[in-house]
Image (cartoon, rainbow, N blue to C red; front, top):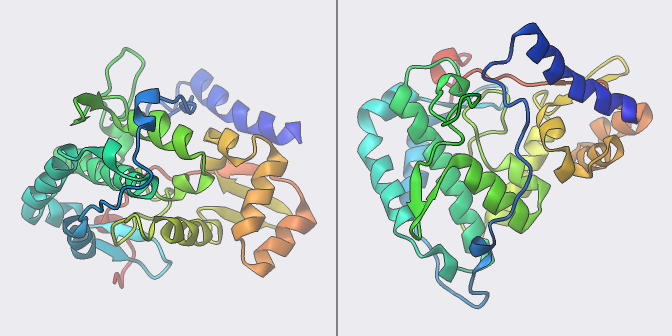
Length: 286
C-alpha cells in the first residue's frame, strides 16, 4: 500500500525538480482549526436566504452532456457582477457564530464558492485559477492565501475558510465535493445554493456524482487512476490507500464498486486545472 503513496508524493517532487508546477498546490494545507470558529448555537432556528446565489448559479452555470458543470464567466462578468457583490456583502454581514451547525456549513460552502467565482471574474479571462497569483509570499501562488473577505471582524482567505474552518470543524470528506475551485477536474459547482436543510443530502449527491465520473475514478485495464484530490487531502479519506478505496466504494455504482474491490489498489492520480469556462465546454450545454 505504501507504494501508491510514494507514487503520489513523488509527482509533486518530480515536477518541482523539473521546474514545472509553478501554479500547482504542491503541498496542500492540512486541517488546522481556528478555535474561534467553533462558536455556534445548537438550538438556533435562524436560517439564511441564499436565493440570490441560487438565481446566479442557475443563470450562469451550464451542464454539459458528460455531466460536467461549466460557468459562463463572460456573461457573469458583464451582467451579474453587481448581484454577486450584493450576495457577498450580505454574507459578510452575517453573525455566523449565532447559527446552528447545518446553517454554518451551508454558509461557509456558499461563501467559498461565491468568493471563488468573484476572484475569477476579477481577473477574467484566465486559462486557470492557478494563473491568478495574488497570494502573499515569495513562493505562494494562486489566489488561495489572499485575505478577501471579512467575517465577524476577521479577515479570511479561501484557504482559511476551507482548511481552518470547514475541514477541521466538520471532519467530513464530502466537503471536498462541495467546495469548488473553478477547475474542470474539480467536483461540480452546484447549480443551487447549499442550505441548512439540504446540505447533507447535497454533499452526498455530489460525492456520488464525482466518484462515478472519470474525473474522480477511471480504470484502464487493471490500473485505477483517481483524482489528485484524494492525494492532496488523503488525511480526510482515511490517510491510507485502503481508506481511499473504502471511501470510493461507499459512493461507487455497483459495477465500479466491484472493479475497485477486484483490483484492490490505486495506480495514479490526475487533475485538470483548466478553468471550468463555457468557452472551453463541449456543445449542447443545458
